[in-house]
Image (cartoon, rainbow, N blue to C red; front, side, top):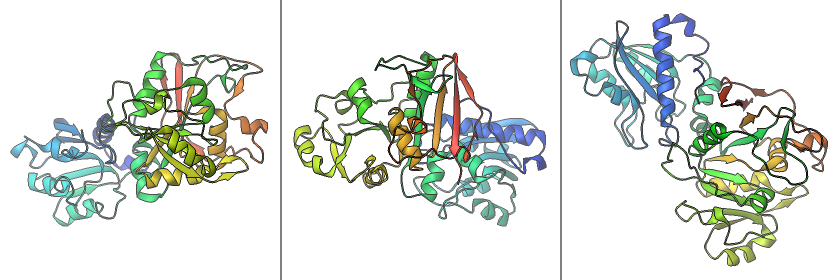
Length: 383
């Protein structure tokens, strides 16, 4: 993601140089995608009189936090400087010592942070620093902007089901494929590389039955970012038809995959897969598998975030059930025309009992980004 960070409301109180360094901290933090989760992506900049003394990001889960890394090696040069951080410095001891103590010990005179720490245990770092004589400015903007940068982290602080993102490649006329079952690439190589980068930041990749039957996808992250923990393939399989030979059940995921089946099909499927995958049994509704129950079962198996890549019908069902938190829409500069497969078939009434989700409630908190000839539009669901 290369869109410029949105520092948000209240930042007009800051000097232009402050805003630039704060935006740089947010941008730095993005480099932790796929490596720091479930921790947040955080960047930090240490500066004095317009000169950057040090900068860093949280590079790896369990490793030094951004603030401590940016201060490392500065010694007395940090005394009296300003530290800019994309997230409020933490004040608790976890895998690393509190960032607040590192900032205070270094003699930093001022701290500017963008997003408030949502967790009760780690939050309050700004207040802690103020009590010890450090000038603190922040937070700026609102939770929705902060969550757009660290979606899984902020969702985890407030929700019980997995964070669900839906990825679709669509034509200019809203189709995902030509008719007749013909499979084509709508997007170019650059957009497909970005999809692999996105996969690296999720715990699981979910597809529906039609997708794994027709494509037999690997569902792995094979891009520039090597995920710290490979995403788990999750296949929806109402009738229990999956076989042990599917590529998603034989990829490099540490031998783990999950197949979600109807309760009456789960037993036979588990025996047939013979340890190739965990089988999650869920109820069936008149629209198919109970997707809310399926997502709840993923949480029980340690899955905190899901990237869904599985076709128009599954996409429509998730949207109708208000189970999607983010839309990744890769818009290709092509027109498929009549007979093409609609991206959202519920709008055409092809899902019994479904209704079109309201047009409002989705907001672009991140600016569109070009990947070759294609454009990525990211939409986050409102409250």
